[in-house]
Amino acid sequence: MYVEPPYGKDDVTQKLRLMAIGFLDAAEKLSNEMEHGSWDGSFERGQPVLLLGFHATELFIKACLNKLGESVPNSHSLGELNLKLSNVRPELELDVPFGPMPVPSPDDELMELVLASDKNAHQQLRYPADTKGQTWGGVRSFSPMLFSEDLRKLRLEIERVSELVFGSSV
Image (tube, rainbow, N blue to C red; front, side, top):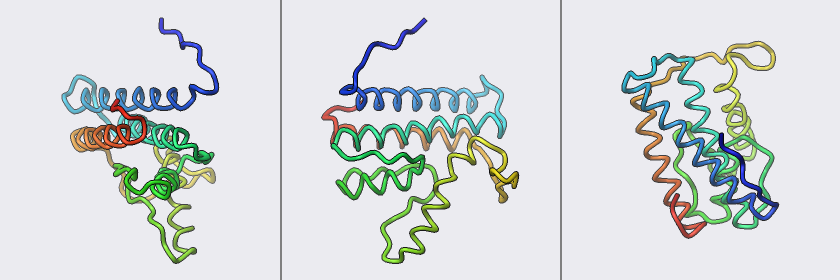
């Protein structure tokens, strides 16, 4: 049994960071097991692996924003979070494996459209349809071999940014 150690309000940043690493570790482990055949793969089993990686990224960006004294948006949008982080310090922008990230645009309407699309990305990993029962459409797939490589790159990105924000890698 593993018991959560006590922590206070001042420890939330470090807790977010440690949880991000835990989610990333789990995503890597499951993706590798699927890739090497020790866990049977399927699209449906790939979705939780993607979600673990996605959530690791979300928590890590929130930990960085918190550490930098910035308000942390109540959002699951990696694009919105990553954009806020890069607005604070451009060198902290993460290269993440979850589709194109919104970039600042002089066209407010276009920016709203991109962010709206990005806001439901986490829902597509969790549910087969939207809140109205409409399937997501398009061709969706999961390749453990490709995602394992994406996760290796994500870990390097998290280590790079972690050095800059926290003064140490993970």
